[in-house]
Image (cartoon, rainbow, N blue to C red):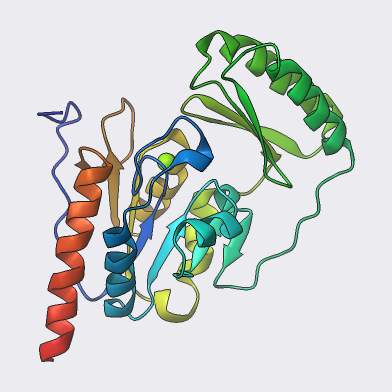
Length: 255
Ligand SMILES: [Mg+2]
């Protein structure tokens, strides 16, 4: 991409008083054909660790994935993390959620449905179910219809629409709520929040940091985003993160 259609400026380099929140897929990592297929560059793990230390721990991952999956991807790092779009939190004590028993029936039906569309897939995240059609565009409409009808059997559940994915998940939690909760705790408290994300689900996070006069950074270009800044793609995010990690670690070393 040579120009940003949203015409948003790039974010400045992080300051020592910032709290950084990174979405993962499409933000730190390039998309792959399947959620398991993503590649985590070794340099990225080193840079995240350096930046996490330079910010005295005020760096968190904010993802639709489970925290266990994030730990596996970024091993040996175990960063503060918000998983399942806000349902899981590591940092403040998180409320435990158990999946309703009806979810197993919905999961089985979803697997039967995607079997008819080669390339479509069901992701079982324990308390949520994600239906992906990135590799099977014809499945978009039937998966939408399925998700809508499944809500009848899942009281308290709603739909979370992402890029080529729809997710059945408990209502009342989003990335913005989870960022707000983390900002009340430990090393995050009192810092300027900065959230970098790419998807529709990240807009809750953008709204939250904007309300706190923080910095919201959209990765790529998308109409209607509340973000105030932008970076072109995950490679640009990683380059920005790397420059920041070395700059802040250098500052920390001389002070
Ligand atoms: Mg994303």
